[in-house]
Amino acid sequence: MEFIIAEDYEGMSRAAADVVGSVMQDDPACVLGLATGSTPIGMYACLAEDAASGTVSFADVTTFNLDEYVGLPGTHDQSYRYFMDQNLFDKVDIDKARTNLPDGCAADLEAMCDAYETKIEDAGGIDIQVLGIGHNGHIGFNEPCEDFPVATHPVDLTESTIQANSRLFDDVADVPRRAVTMGIGTIMKARKVLVVANGEGKADIVSEAFTGPVVPEVPASVLQLHPDVTVVLDAAAAAKLDVA
Ligand code: GLP
Image (cartoon, rainbow, N blue to C red; front, side, top):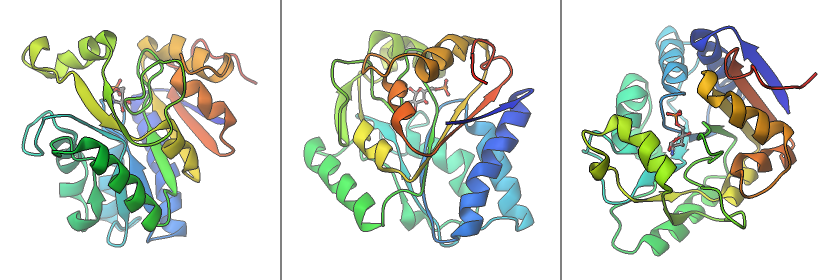
């Protein structure tokens, strides 16, 4: 596990964009695994700048997002499809036909999840998976549980995640109670993983996930077992991390 500790959010965003950019430069037809949440917004802004300056190109890139709420269409301003369009896809030279998110409105969610896994495999697998981290250690929407879930699956959100994400909705009652997420197995199959976290509110979970025991009660802890993980933090999120 490699740690890059930047001074602030801007530095974290630039460092994270450089990690993704270097994968894109090595293979312009790479497969990116993408995440939503507040944390990667600055990284996406940096990548959009890089695409505008010609440092990177999304023309031949394929993307798969980690997760999506159940029941929100892509036109809903809190859907993750809308988030990705606003923060990245509409700002870069990407072919939207090659941007994939789980369909949280599918009539048969289980079948959609199976098809999503197949589509990732058919694309050759994920070259780099970007992850934020929830306050309870969730990655994607893999909430703390008794066993690491393997494949893409529907999930009931925990009360703490509903509360945390309610800041983006008019009312907590509007936050969907369910989501669809890549599994821990899907994430672990990515050839490289990039975790981003910022702010003092993430300091405890960053330390617990990356220096504590590997347990499904802290889903992000499983990343300690992945052979190629880069964790990019700002100083506040790194404050409780005790690594050399
Ligand atoms: C959300 C998303 C995660 C994200 C996490 C942290 O629930 N499903 O993919 O990493 O919460 O979000 P934030 O970056 O806003 O703290």
